Structures are given as structure tokens and as C-alpha cells.
Length: 238
Image (cartoon, rainbow, N blue to C red):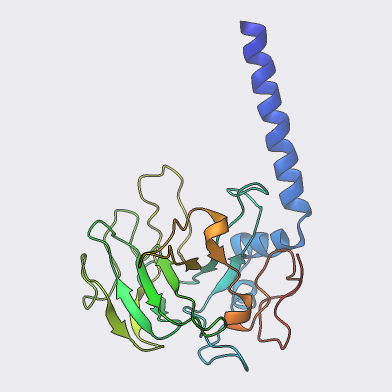
């Protein structure tokens, strides 16, 4: 039994080592290290600020910051089998400081138990007319769950229409009941409709959509090479 346990621990160690080496080899990880270890000037150089829509794109970037985790990102805590479902926009300041804006026109819902998240129904997908999509904004609370969401969106609010650019709240570092601390950021994703007037489970990658063409930036991990910025060709075939 002891030998089995030791072999199991060794296998876990080898797996974690390969994951670490893979993450370090990823060119996107160099920027993550710069954000983590760099000085103020180095961190500022990583920040994307895009308050206007990119040419030809329907959405505005919902928050300023370092877009450090991309759509389809396999780096820890994600994996190739369960990649990142949206983008994470990391804030240069403390929790509760960096504004979060509505990326598009749509109806805001905040479920009764949600401390840090909002979801916004867009009844007519601007890139696929006739399809409903949902925009998910998360981590807008401090580590203790004290919300940074605007008072206009209390728990239980449903289908409150807001135009693009409406202030929704401020970025935070709330991570639910997880023991894993997170940096201050906004998680933003585009979620598919369930066909019955609701949204699908955002935690499943297959239920989400690449935000690249909606924001006019190359945001898919398999495609991005430089810091995100407006581009005429934001998508690729990953």
C-alpha cells in the first residue's frame, strides 16, 4: 500500500512538473511573470485601454487592464481538456477601484445568491443575428464577498436593460469558497443561450464563444502573439 501511495505521489509530481514547464514555455507566460514581478512602469506597459469599440467590432472592452488569461487558455489552473472559458482582465489597482462597463446593450440579471457576478442577455447576437447570447461578468467583490456591483443591480434583479458603456461595478478578488487566492481582475465571457430563455453553464467551455470578433482583438490563446489591440483580423483557426 505504501509503495502504491509513493508511486501515486511521484506520478502527481511528474504531472505538475510537466504542467509547470509547459506554462513557462508558453510565450504568454512571460508577460504574466512581468505583471507579477515587474515594477509599475513594466506593469503599465501591459495594460490594454480601449474605451471605444474597435473598428468593425460591436463590443467595448468591459474594463481596462492586463488581459493575462485568454479564451481557450490551457495554463494553470486550467488545462487543455478544460481550457479557460473567457478572458481575465487584471487590474493595476486595489480591489474596488477599476470600473467595469457593459460591453453591449442588453438586459442585466443578478441571481439572488450572486455576490460578485452579473449576466447580461443580448437577445440578438450582433455577429449572428437571430441568436441570443449572454455576457458574464465576475469577481466584482472583495475576498470576503463584499460586493463592488453598482446598487442599481441588487441581488435578485432581473432583465434590467442597460445600454453599452453603463457602469456595472468595479473589479475585485472574490473567489467564492475556494482556498485559492486570486489577483484583482474581471472575468468576462460570452455564454450561449439554452434555447429556453436561460443561459447555459459558463463553466463548460463548449457553452462559450470566442470573444475575439466581438471585441475586435485577437483573444484566443491559440492565436494571440502580441498584447491585445484592435486588429482587422482578430480570429484564426486554432
